[in-house]
Amino acid sequence: MSLKEELLRYLEEHRDAPVSGQLLAERLSVSRAAVWKAVKSLEEEGHHITAATNRGYQLEAASDVLTAQGVRCHLRPAYRDCTVLVERRVGSTNTQAKKLAADGAGERTILLADEQTAGRGRMGRGFYSPARTGVYMSLLLRPETDSAQLPIITVAAAAAVCEAIEALTGLETKVKWVNDVLVCGRKVCGILTEAVSDFESGRTESVIVGIGVNVKTPPALFPAELREIAGSLLPASVSRNRLAAEIANRLFDYAADLPGRAYLEPYRRRLMVLGKRVRFYREGAWQSGRAVGLDSDGCLEVEAPSGTVLLRAGEIRMEGEPT
Figure 1 (spheres, helix red, strand yellow):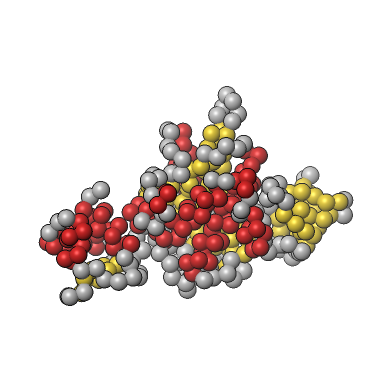
Figure 2 (tube, one colour):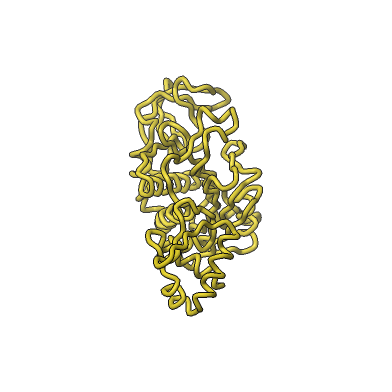
């Protein structure tokens, strides 16, 4: 790790108070002049650093440059050795993560992008991903499961996102089955879970969990067709590095014991559709019913005129919401 990277990691870990140049020089085993040069180099890359005489250096609250060092320092010790990659711009983090998986990338690889030009959501939709305003990440998992378990991994990811947002911002989150996270009635996060399978055996070799969170996207920046439904975590303020790490921490914990289903209750508690009438697409037509429960595999139980329907995949609409 270069001096610049070590300095950034240290400043990220100590955002709450200034750190003296002398202390940094001692901790990093360099001169104070070398620290000063590294600070200037970080500033040229877009980091906002306050340098106060007799106080030291401190990353400003507004400094929110997405970096591997910034994410890694907020990962739990058990996950600090995982691969963290940050790209300035990609088409889709999920698409790129699939290539990494095919090339043998390790379990718990984290890929983040500052911007996506072709972000993907479920049902073939796009995911609006403007630069420097969100967390766009894909996590590579290698669970011992098959593609039939993809819905439960999405449930675990949604629970991880909700818990991370609430822990860091204090905002209340809700989930619209199966993969949308809402704050104040607006969608702030979407999740796309995809399997990478071996062609010959059909076995699922890895799972890519794509997560997009609108962290500080101004309302006016959303395209017109999204302004009534999309939102962000504003006015709450949170470091994108820290949010990405906290989501990863919680999802990795859940993924380590998928059969334990520890994520089901946090997910169920935030599920906004339970007890409400919904519409769902089945057998070539939209049907109606009342969402009454969530089974142990993350499937939505709907009471319909024809009987109880178990929805494993697809999407639903709340009553009154256009189809």
